[in-house]
Length: 119
Image (cartoon, rainbow, N blue to C red):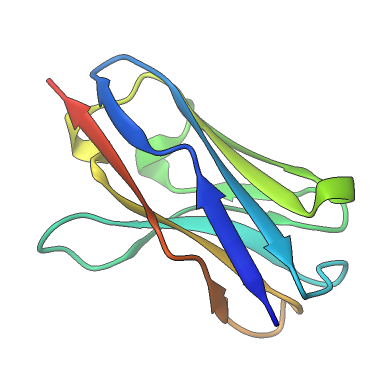
């Protein structure tokens, strides 16, 4: 049974930092990767950042470049999203995602964690 368990969301002020974590179990990531997406109220889910498990190549949305950093811990099957210089427009539910091969879209999702940034 595949599980993605997120943690680390919360309420912060603009300019603060947060770190999200997502622990994956029940799947093999060596040929795939993990990522973070977010969905703000009234908006569609959007890509934030992802990482290829083998080699660690990362990608980031333009809106978070220079502020958010994705990383992974291979031994713990865990991905992190370090979010610095948070802005009110970063307020959203953040979802962790995983895929066991890079040939398909993300097909495993976490339950989501709320991040609220006050001005």
